[in-house]
Amino acid sequence: MGRRHVLLGSAPVRSLPDYVAAGGGSALALADRLGAAGVLDELELSGLRGRGGAGFPVSVKWRSIAGGGPEAGERFVVANGAEGEPGTFKDRFLIAHNPYQVIEGLLIAARVVGARRALLAVKASFTAEAARLTDAVAEISRAGWSAGIGIELVLGPEDYLFGEEKALLEVIEGGDALPRQLPPYLHGLFTAGPRLGWSTHASAAGASADAANPTLVNNIETLSAVPVILREGGEWYRSLGTAESPGTIVCTVSGDTARHGVDEFELGTPLDEIIDTLGGGLPSGHRIGFVLPGISSAAIDAGAIGVAASYEGFAAAGSALGTAGFIVFDERTDPLELAAAVARFLARASCGQCPACKLGCERIAELLADGRNRPLEVPVLARRLETVTDAARCYLPFQCQAVVSGLLPRLRTARRSGPARALELSPIVGYVNGRFRYAETDRPTTGFRPA
Ligand SMILES: Cc1cc2nc3c(=O)[nH]c(=O)nc-3n(C[C@H](O)[C@H](O)[C@H](O)COP(=O)(O)O)c2cc1C
Ligand code: SF4
Image 1 (spheres, rainbow, N blue to C red):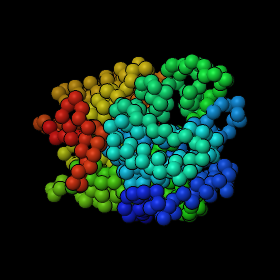
Image 2 (cartoon, helix red, strand yellow; image 1 turned 45 degrees about the vertical axis):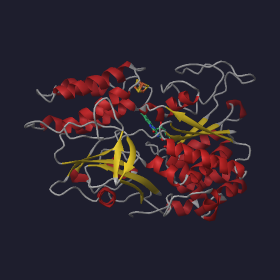
Image 3 (tube, rainbow, N blue to C red; image 1 turned 180 degrees about the vertical axis):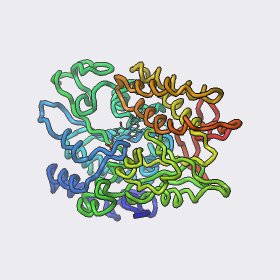
Image 4 (cartoon, rainbow, N blue to C red; image 1 turned 90 degrees about the horizontal axis):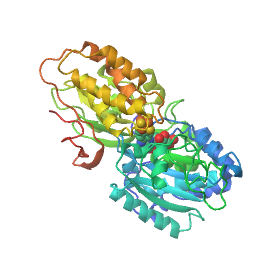
């Protein structure tokens, strides 16, 4: 356990010849020799799980897209580099470090599922990463690796929902970041017929109205792991990490620690070790109060700080590993302010297609804000937390439910004496002198900001 470089090397990879010198490209050649079935078997053996937050088994997803025969329609593959989760900066780091590895993984995915178009989606504001990808695509195409597969870069909006896979497909088709009804394997890109979605599209010439065009969406880190797994073997990858969480994970540490950082660790490494290694402890006189793993799952209390950073470890602690973006809050943090900051962020991000989500997140944020000055209306809050997910198209309101419900026992008992630190959550936009910089929102913020 501990720090372990599998996806990340000692220094950023500057050119395609440098990547090839380090073994790059051999996985693509191997994938051609193994064929789709061989690659899928190797991925199954590796036990690789998606790193976009849910930890879904990669071989299962790839098989479902590859299956279904020609009548299911065209196949597409998409690399999700939208990275908008507060506390997470690892996809941008991976792209900056080695864009060739991401593209090699994407091309292997395209060959396995039979896609002729492969898309790389990042926010338009990620200018340095977009430039790295553009240059790498040009080099890879000149070298003939793409073998007839068109690789396109998609520059998307700032919306948090841009990273949600059903909204991502809408953006790729030229729409807004509004999640549609059906998942990408049932309603993929550029379908011809109505598919019960946010919108339908005009028939493409010759396309069957029933074709679902199953589309594979994988996170940048997930795709980066694929060439390494093929090169070193599924069995080798499975020998790292734990039985239920094989391999490594690229972690981000931010918040009240002395410094911030991104690095790769074997899954199962204790959370406190990751925080110490990347964060260098807390400034003197302070200690950890809570750790929030992104804004998708319950906070980890200081008492559970030694939890294994694995899918099963975090589940046993009543939380979820998510994207391994750990936001550290010190002992001065009021759980009410933390819950309110998360609810406010999600209420702003909610698109409003599902009323229970938009109105519910807003009401939860209001109830928590009111709790600053008068006793918290716990029964009303608990009821709203129950119904906020009603008829939800996407997972966003479940995030609100998970984080606020997780803090609720503390909210019931917390005694407030005097003004607390106001908090504001915001995505990371850069890294300067060992600390992250954060996006400006409508309020001044440093990601989380002392009042
Ligand atoms: C509100 C919301 C935002 C999301 N943002 C991202 C994101 O920025 N990047 C990402 O890879 N996945 C994001 N996801 C998860 C994707 O929907 C999807 O599950 C993931 O890209 C699948 O890749 P994986 O199987 O490789 O993990 C988000 C999900 C939700 C509900
Ligand atoms: S659940 Fe919320 S964020 Fe997701 S589509 Fe519905 S309203 Fe939009």
